[in-house]
Image (tube, rainbow, N blue to C red; front, side, top):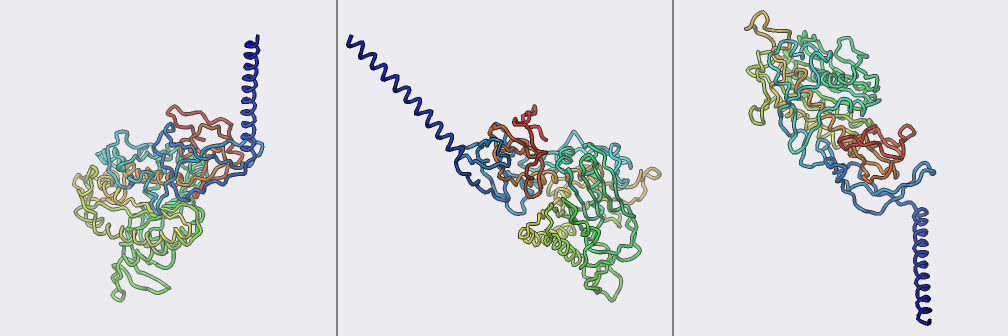
Amino acid sequence: MKLQWFRNKQNHMLGKLVVAILLMGFALRLVFFRSTRLSPILEATPIAKKSVLPISNLPVSVLPISNPPIPVLPISNPAVPVLPIPNPPALVPVQENEDQVPPNEKCDLLNGDWIPNPSGPTYTNRSCSLIESHQNCINNGRPDTGYMYWRWNPRNCELPPFDPERFLVMMRDKTWALIGDSISRNHVQSMLCMLSTVEQAVEVYHDEEYRSKRWNFPSYNFTISVIFSPFLVKADIFEDFNGVSTSEVELYLDKLDKKWIDQYQNFDYMIISSGKWFLKTAIYHENDTVLGCHGCSKGNLTDLGFDFAYRKSLHSALDFIVSSNHKGLIFFRTSTPDHFENGEWSSGGTCPRTAPVKEGEIELKDLNTYLRKVELDEFEKAASKASENGVNLKLLDLTMLSFLRPDGHPGPYREFHPFAKDKNATVQNDCLHWCLPGPIDSWNDVIMEMVELRKKGYIPNFPPGVCYTSLFRLDIWGTGSPCLFYIRETEEMGLTEPNDRDRRSMAPPPRAKNGAQNEY
């Protein structure tokens, strides 16, 4: 009996102990939960202004997620519960003026080779009505088509092809301008042809000479312009559309061309360039005084050389840009090399090659080398001031990429079937502009990637539960936590704040078949 009583007492004490432990655990859980809900707001670790996430090549399943302290940040709607999320992965700072270098430090978008592209161009001379006759090489009778089946391939990294639909979505309510000479016009036609595979561009403006134009993509409210300003400074030009001059160019080196500076603040993105027009015979003015000339026949004027005017004009244009308060993105594009062999434009030069070349197979002409040197010198001077003033001036150095494509020019096929009547006819060759479709289309691959990389370099401190997917194609927080809403658009120096139209359901969007998140 006594033994039975002892056992019952022991069981009773054991039961009390178990109940006490359970009550203590519940109390601790309650205290911890309340302390978490009522704890002071933690200050988020500031993120470097220019930074790039080192995760662009990783699938969602292998994102580097650590277990740091979880910040609790405020959100605008207090009725919505705060959802804790881990800090984003470590950031790698981007060096100034290196926006052509993706997160992989070994990758340079402009260092690569041309490789075969069996799929060919995204448009044809028949599907795009915006190609000017001088660049419509197939329609003009060029017999070979192999020049259209190559793509630019950077070493040690992948360059995605230009995605016209994605580009239009990115550029909703934005404006672009390409400012320069006829190469800029050549380039805008390439871009328009690629974008027109999604929606036809509508021409909304042209000047009297049809050299400056503007187009709109109505569904996206996206506008793109080409502004003919070959010198970037004020110039009186006396020549026709075919380049036949009746007098010297009158160039005013201290006065920028109003055709572009009067519209400058209206553009979100610009590509500015110049170059070969400075080789033309010209008289130079400054402070309402004639300084001298280049190639002129007037004996009382000093021949100052084209480089004198080129350097001064670039300096004036770039100084205007970096001194402005413009917050868009401005690309300064280096001049494109020509590929005349056995002569020049006016002396019977031709460009008979039918395939790309490798580095070292041909040499860049002294003239093209010098033009590029002046461009890089002036850009370097402007870049430091741009950085100080918060101006987004970036170098778009396409010289060497283009130099490896001597096969991409119209040559004699700038005119319609030039040898139809005489197979041995002497005709004008164009070894400067580019056939469409052609190598110039790859410029757009590079530009789109640079724009996307720049946008990816600015990651704000979002409140918990906010996921940003429109450019990363993945949830940058990588936690699997439900998202209260999604951010889908960006401004150039960061992301827009969420608003009512960006709010989405509490659950993340459905995954696409390839594992990437669908985009909004």
